[in-house]
Image (tube, rainbow, N blue to C red):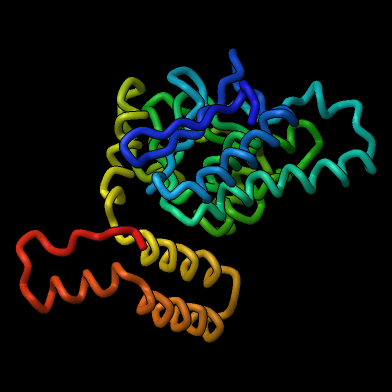
Length: 259
C-alpha cells in the first residue's frame, strides 16, 4: 500500500481513500495503491462492501499529466498495462462497490468511478473524459465502461468533446445513481453499502459475476454463466440457511453467515 491510498474497515464496510491534495491526481503510485487496496478488499472476509472516496473536496481530477508527458510510446505500452490492471482490480472486487464523488471526477478519476457498481455524487460534482483536449483518448476503461453504462451516443458525445457533465445531467443519463449535498456524500455511499453487511456474500458475489461477465458476451453465453453461478450457490451454507428460513417461515428471515 501507499500513504496516498488508504484502506480502512469499519462495520463491515471498507473504504479505499485516495489522499493526494489538492486534486488527487492519479499518479503511478496511486494507481499501484488502488490495485493493492482492491486485492485487500477482495481477500478480507470482514469486508462486505466497499466505498471508493477521494475526500470531501475532490474525487480525482484525472491522471498526473506532468508525470505522463515525458513518456515515450514504449513507456506507455508498459505503463498502460498496470493502469488498466489497477482499475480492473477495482471492477473485479467480488463485493458491492460505490464511488462517493465530490467535486471533480475527470479522466482517470471518472474512469475510477466507472469501475464501481454504483456512484453517489455531490450536487456540485463534475464528471468527464477530457483526454481529447490533450490529444489523447481515455485509457483506463472510459471508452468501454462509459459506453456500456450510458450508451454509445452519449459516451461519444462526452469523449469526443471532452466536456464536463454536471451531477444533475449525470443522474439524468444514468452516469450516477444518486445526488446529495456535498457534506452527505460519504454517509450516503456508506448507507447504500450498509444493506449488504451480514448478507449472503457468495450469492451477491455470484450475481455480480454473472452480470459483469454476461455484459461481455452474447446472450446464450451469458445465460450459461448465470446457470453455472446459480447452481454453484447451492454449495453454500447461506443457501441452506436462506431456504430453511423461508420454508420454516422464520420471522425476520435468515441470519446469513457469509459462507
